[in-house]
Structures are given as C-alpha cells and as structure tokens.
Length: 203
Figure 1 (cartoon, helix red, strand yellow):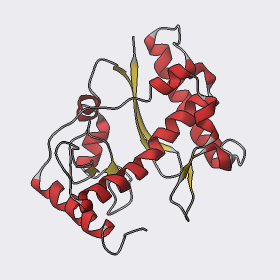
Figure 2 (cartoon, helix red, strand yellow; figure 1 turned 90 degrees about the horizontal axis):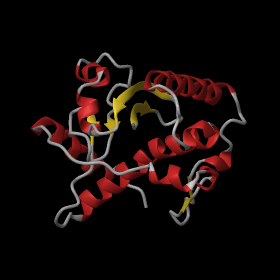
Figure 3 (cartoon, helix red, strand yellow; figure 1 turned 120 degrees about the vertical axis):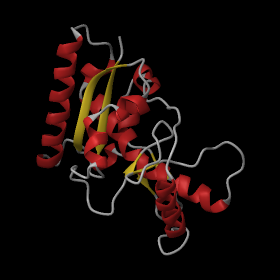
Figure 4 (cartoon, one colour; figure 1 turned 180 degrees about the vertical axis):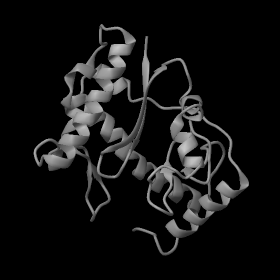
C-alpha cells in the first residue's frame, strides 16, 4: 500500500503543513481538495505571506491562492513559456525537499513494514525533525546538498541529494495530472505572466 504525503514547503525547505495517510491510489488533486489545507487557504486562515500564492503542478486546480502551469498541449507563446519556466523553478524547492528528506532519513528509501497508522506517525516525526534540524543546524543541509544555479550561464548544478538517492527513490518523485480553474485565478496568473515578462524578468 502506498501512502501519500501532502506537504506545503517554504523556500527554506521547511514544512508548514502536512497531511499524511491518504491512499496512494487517490489523485493528488483529490487529496488536496479534501484536505484542511484547502479550507485554510480558501478561508485565508493559513499563515502564508500576504500577496503570496502556493505553487503547484498540473495535478492542482488553478485558484486565486494556487498557481499552476499552462497546459503543455498545443503551442504556448513565449510569455506563457516563461511563466511555466519560472513556476517550474519555484517548484524545484518541493522536489528538493523530498529528495533531501529521503537522503537524510534512509528509512524512506524502501517500503516500511509497519501498520499504516504507525507509518503516518513516523512521517510526521521525520518532518518535525527535519524542520527542527533545518532551523537549528548549519550541517544538516550543506550548501552543496541542494541544487544551485550558475548566475552567469543559467545552468542548474545538481545537489548531492540526487546522487544520494537510490533508483527506487528517484522513480517515486513522480509527475501528476490536471484540473480546472476560475476566471479570477486566471487574472492573477496573467498578472504573474506580465510581471515575469516585465519588471520581474530575468536574463
């Protein structure tokens, strides 16, 4: 049985929300739709910074609080491709978070032969320890552990967490599905497109 971890991760690789225990057969979008995180985001009771959004992939619906990429079906114009690229760069944080977690807590590299309820508790404990170490230790995540970008060439330099994962762990960093969105959310996404192609552009 596969167990899904739904986590909201900040730019410092710390977890501000987790929902663990959903069956792996459930869709990621469906798990989010039934989570307390969605309710908190919609009611604005989660403590994400003002004028910020959560970044997701195509498994999640476009919402005023959740940005997702433009679908890759058909041809995207340059501005939309730039938006997708910038969103992809932001989403790398969550990919790196999972990789770092698995490389630091080797228990996660293979199936855990315990009752699902105990596995849920272990995952919660691991995320809590991860946050504590991230905030208190200079050695838990070394500078070379995470991916970095060469500011002169734009090249992504892989972090050591990638080489520390076994093949099965790498396969588990999977891609996800798609969903619908609202007009207001589309307006917000268009504002990001304009910003990424204007004042917020990068070379």
